[in-house]
Length: 622
Image (cartoon, rainbow, N blue to C red; front, side, top):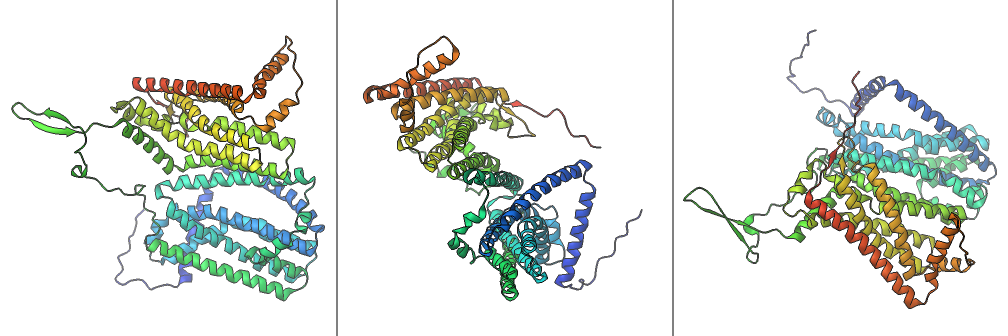
């Protein structure tokens, strides 16, 4: 087969209109999409079919519930319900459209090729925006078009009403996509190009967590009210409904309620207002997107991340007040003098800590590991505020204890495994020993302390416990972050590993389970010691109601007698109780902290090795 290459053009090609270039690029984009679907495996389509069936079943059940609620509502209440529904739909479009816009405008493999094509940039961005619109179509259909159709069928609206549904739905659809692209400009400015895949993974993970939590909202309302009656909840919220009328989702609800009440002219006016507003936002988004790429506000080059640092010359370093060491080397009869500045142990410690902290700053997967417990804990706090029952209190306490055990030493547990194949660097530095270990501890304690304070103190303030218990949790977060990080560092240096295929796997499973078990015992004893120092009012009032326990020779009686014996110091005089609390808290913490740190320093001086682990099975090419 011969390939005939046409001769070069003598004259530039005739300029085409925007519509012709747009249709050409859009046709090519559709062709690429169809070819991609043709080469997908059958298991992919089977999985998509199963997910679609599950999604349709959920949609049918929620549609039946919503249809039943709309039947019992007045027209004014229907407007408030639709406003809330459209607000959720617009927020969902922004969130999912942000991920789609980031992938289409920042991670697309053909973007640089399209930039070199003889078409204007606005045509390229218009085609990419169409792909974002298509990805948002399902969300707009579920939260905008489908509720409007349901309302029309329920109230037996005229045919002209469905024209209002189409116009206002398209306006809200365009508005959500435009807002997603505007927010995407900020994300593209913040995230460097070499971290784009991690950013998409972070946004996808957050989307999954938020979707899972949103699906629990109906259960929370059922638990707090006994039935899912949104109409009764909105009946006394006229002020809220009036405020929402100043925003696009309120305009759409006004357009649909006007169509239901046979006020087609008013509904058409609100629909046109939404369309004009969405077109204005869309135009601003396209203009800013094109200027961002033209003026260098956004870059897709895969260069090195981080800001550029100025190099400091040796002559600019002040060496007058520092002791110097002279080294002579060279051939016979020739000497050369070189000045070597002795390194500071504290500077070496901070260098190790700064290296790990910068790694956390650049790796968005580390951010995600901290966001998950905060988001889920916030959900359980909201559930407790909605329904302060015994089940919600027990679930809140159990989740708080579980996250405290897992995340108080998790960062330190991965400290030495983070070195990967560069473990020789820390083994060969002249400051091996306590500067390296304390540097790792500093880098692990600072983020862990922020997380523990947010989990423990934030939960106590949100729930509204006593001041003494909040103070106990604030002090426990400090002692716990230091002690648990010391335990995690010891197990990290003894059992660190590195998997090139899964970089987050930095510790062996058996070592992590052992660390969690020891950390659990440490948390129990530390919490008991702090209760002696600051006895919480809730615990003291509950223990005062307990009758005296008689010891019997069985396991249950032994446990009850032990707990009863441990609770007696809470009723001692303040001086003796405080002295006992100081001795137990200080002695336990000093033993755990300095014991594990000494063992870790000893192992660091001997040298440590990161075990390389690779997956045994690989996908074979067919």
